[in-house]
Image 1 (cartoon, one colour):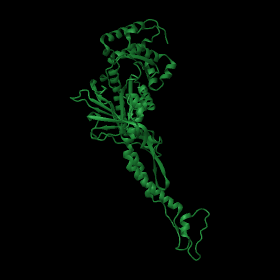
Image 2: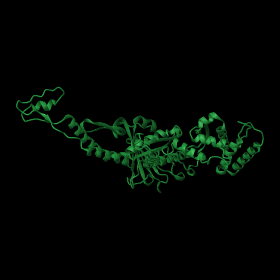
Image 3: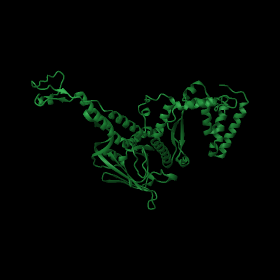
Image 4: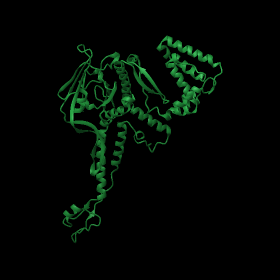
Length: 487
């Protein structure tokens, strides 16, 4: 997935979904590079046939309207389309003006004009009895580019479907578009701004003061124009009462109470506390258990958005495999890097992929932090759940524990246990070309091979493959009784 820049695209889509409530991933096949192409689409580019459809699967057709340069249209389709100035939406910031010159910038959607652009409209129609493979219509400017069947079989069981994946911040029942955090906090923000503006006006009046003067005693026009600047000489009529500042009182406590209440409402509506927003602990909380409860509450409040991102990543992975299955007719070379920074090279064909038999799972790094993982491992070690019948940690378990704690590379520098495990895992993939060396750690190899057999993975390949692996295990057991080179 590194070729598709998945991490960067997920970040872009999440920014759109958190601000606007909804974002989309578009997955297609790049014929020039012979690989999958993934991009993030803003909600302003997608037009479903019904806004009350709960999901993409309930839409009969969907339109993707995007702005492309005239040169890119000519390079892609060989069409000479006249470009013009078009307005597009983009992420930006807006200057928010408060009372008495208090300004701030807030994230928002802005418009900008691009020159020499062409509006490209793609309309995708779901497969029907009349069009078993669906229908795709592409118009660039005023010219028809494509009219035919849907090109991508990304649906279940090789069916043709929309190449889009929908991500939402918060689902709305019976609505195609999701709700965003920004939308929920706008009313609270307006109330908070009103309180702050009135409070600042009151403080400004206290600082500048209100001057009480007798009618005709001073030059009112000069006083209104220049005010009471430092060092100013104020002349008043002889015999009149001298000007004096009126008592403005104090700022009412209701301002502070309402301000604190609205700040707390921000926390409730947005779903995050100060602990998650500013990485600062509340002044009244000193217990580690209480801080952990606050962190768990933040995770629960963010679960809706996190689950949507996880589900989208799983769907993207399925679509990638289905496109490889559809378009890779010959042998394709790919590199794979494991957690030990070991790079493997694999060859595969489209016929080798069966994505409908695969279930992808993702993990949340919010709840599964390194500190949480290490604490759990120490608890398991203290409980004796990771030791053998003699109460000792095996070499394989030591390597696994250090790997889970994030010291996999450090373990590689200390001994060869992880290298033996890695070699045994490679033998599981291709047992026909596996050979037993005198330097092999038979205990680690046997543990890895037996786990592969009893998990059912060897049997899924074929019965003959499982028997070959069992014969390989028997050779390891036979050589265990013979002298071998120790680590």
